[in-house]
Image (cartoon, rainbow, N blue to C red; front, side, top):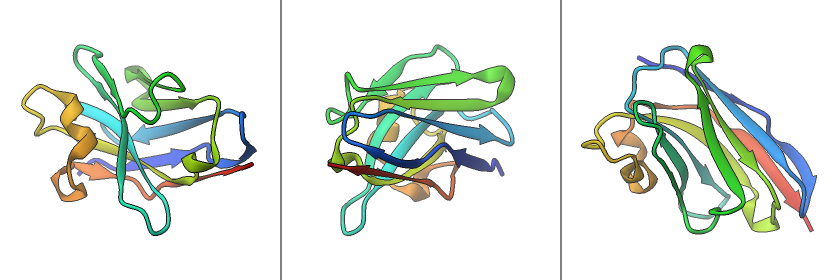
Length: 128
């Protein structure tokens, strides 16, 4: 089973930037992506990328501020986060997902049990 390890979280002020990384033990899933969960909030799919054709999808709340990318040789997916806001504070988890029927946007609204794997997460804290 694929294993995912995230890094790059931290504390920043509003308007700041962070870059999250997720290293996979194997890069065989059709989709890679990120979801986040804040205390007391529902899980939110943030971004997804196809490992085959590179198609990218974002949630409405982060589009234009976050950028997902991948380095297949390094089995790594990144999430560049700019113009961070206090409402972006959450634990960010990497995900691997194959049962997308070819459409990685579906990774944004699936339950965690639908994923091939997800990581332990890296904490992002944005202060105002």
